Length: 83
Figure 1 (cartoon, rainbow, N blue to C red):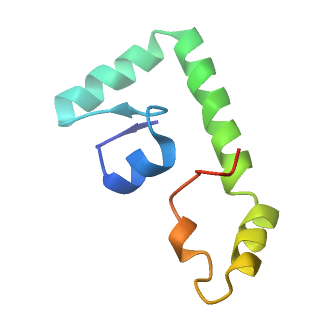
Figure 2 (cartoon, rainbow, N blue to C red; figure 1 turned 180 degrees about the vertical axis):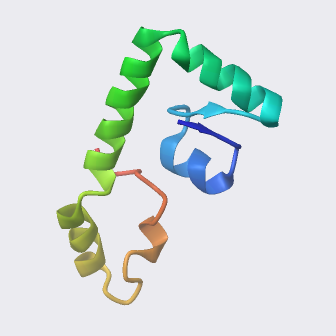
């Protein structure tokens, strides 16, 4: 994934994202991914791992059941403890 350094993105993915500051950076990151099969594969594999670890519906429900008052809001955007 290519993104700006938004706090929520950084909190959820850490260094699992290629960050871009402007349109030219986006272009460079996309071209880098286009030209590097290994990097694309590794980033895709890590992205899937992060999603499966923290955004699986069963895990979301577990977090919400642990703290019904919060309803999972404290953990939204964070994968800490989901590995």
